[in-house]
Amino acid sequence: MTPSITVSDPKAIRALAHPTRLALLEILGGEGSATATRCAELSGQSVTSCSFHLRTLARFGFIEAVPGEGRQKPWRLASLRQQIAIDAVAGAGGDASKAAGDAFDEFFLSHEFARIRAWLQRRGEESEAWRRASLMSGATAWLTPEELAEINAEVDA
Image (cartoon, rainbow, N blue to C red; front, side, top):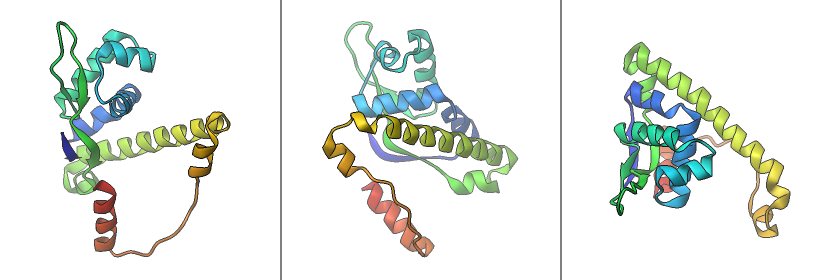
């Protein structure tokens, strides 16, 4: 497994902009590896749907097959982090890349906000340790591009 992959292909970016596929990536991140059957149990989708979306994610290099026993075909993340190449979607890759990047940005932000809202709704059910450890804050930091790149590298490490 590689630590990080950078995605710049508009087709791959569009492949990520699907709720089932993001859910499957989250499941694989949490489980380590999982079959389509296990993904279906955890996502509420059908096995057929999960299998299709897992193969799509594999085709674009986001996940990879893990050797399994018998007919079992487990999958795992190909990398711990997927990055969208901003320069590729901000116009350098043409109109198709920009449109794919813009659509993904909107989709991804909506997805992440939904996750935050879900946490807010269930946080009372979490342990006191989790409630104390979690927080929301806002801040402004004035950084050079180099300083921001350094912070991103530290987060990746």
